[in-house]
Image (tube, rainbow, N blue to C red; front, side):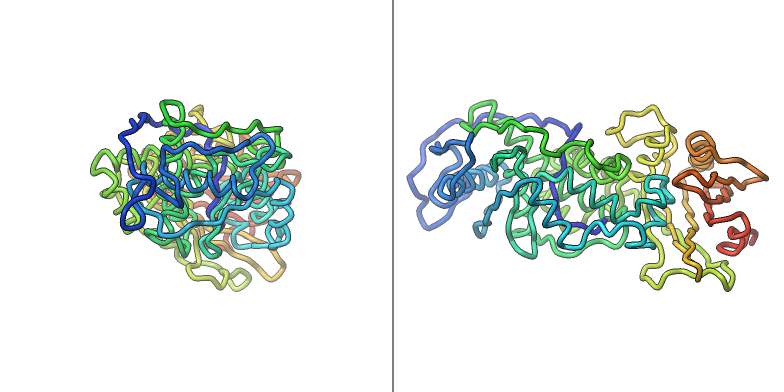
Length: 443
């Protein structure tokens, strides 16, 4: 999940109410230098003379970028400190660049992360997590801002290299965030990456939707280009489960930002960049921020000499409520809407840790321990996970809490699922005998 800041299709995102801004008159250039709502010679409500159907030449692109920056300032009430260069590439060129940068390593590329995604029953053993994430991103990204290179790349939605005004506005918000608050670094766990992106991408989508609303209610805006099916959306070579996880900040984030804005305006949103949510749970349920923080879950190492943990710090990952929802949705354990991110088996989450294991023969396994708000919540999750194994992956139940998925499945392994009060522990290994080697039962 440690990837660049990217704009995916905001499927299901909230369309925020906007308003037209009346023209009240202003000078051609602000006195004393810059002003909010003015950038590089353009006020937010100035016209631009461009033709979009055949793409934008350099001067047209600079004009559109300058006015869009001024409009982002007008909405966000924050000032850009420098101009960000914008490049437009085709979908094919973006994929070529992505491959040349070493993404999409395939099975075995990151065996630690492979076990994390296998625990979610979203990425099978033949695909590999790097490959699944890379393919999903490459067919979904509409643009990205690179903090390290301080530039924006827009992926054209058609064969003709054109700019979508919404994508440009979204990525310019990221540039503004970086200039005002900093966007360097990456959180340690999958869940905290999603929760941070709930702010970063949620704010960008919030501003983008407001921008689009004002284009419909008074602002003169460039036409949005027609897409020729260049690869966006949730089709193509994507892993739909991975897509659901990655898209969560874009879908849940705007509502979270809207709630925080209602509490204290843009000042309260500014403060989020110094105090990101601690979990995707808080983004999905804004009323739980900042009070309901996740519990720390520690997994005791009860492995034998044949199995060992990876040499990583931290040794485990926290997948969180958003990823568990994706597990339930894509394994047919909930009838909830895909983009609600709320289901009975996932919404009582309180904390979790997945610790991957390996042996000298190249085998992999994991111990996934999760804590829940109540015994009922823990029971619902455990029952739903068992149901996913038996109902979707044809697992047999040879004894007690042990389940075995057949060899012809992407998740062909043995599982031991035990609930104790509000805690659920799932142990996974290649065979039933390996389960005790990875995590000795009892104690």
